[in-house]
Image 1: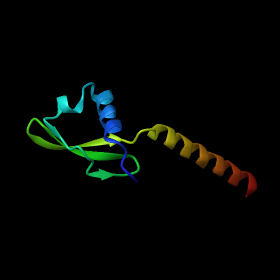
Image 2 (image 1 turned 90 degrees about the horizontal axis):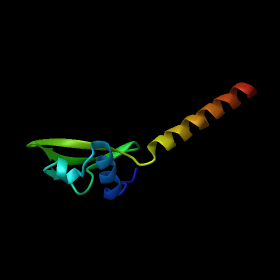
Image 3 (image 1 turned 30 degrees about the horizontal axis):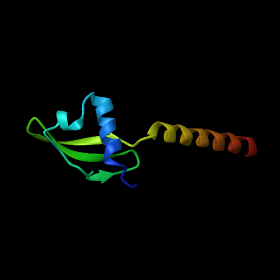
Amino acid sequence: MPFFSKEEAFDFIKKELGANPEKIFSDISSEPVAAASLGQVYKANLDGIQVAIKVQRPGLLELIALDIFVIRFLADMTQKNF
C-alpha cells in the first residue's frame, strides 16, 4: 500500500494522544519506515527508548465497513442462488 501524508499521520497521533507528536516524543521520523493496508509505522524516541508508532490509515473504519457490506451482500446472493 502507498504511504499517506505525514500531516494526516501526525494529525491522527495528535487526535489520539492529545498533543502534537513533537511534544510527546523527543524525536520522531519525518517519513514512515513501513506501510500496510491498515496503517504505517514511524520511528520515535520516548524517554530515551526507541519506539515504533503505528498510525491507522485515514478512513479505515469506512473501508472495513464497506468490505463487510460487500461480503454480506455476496453471501446473501450466494445463498439465494445456490
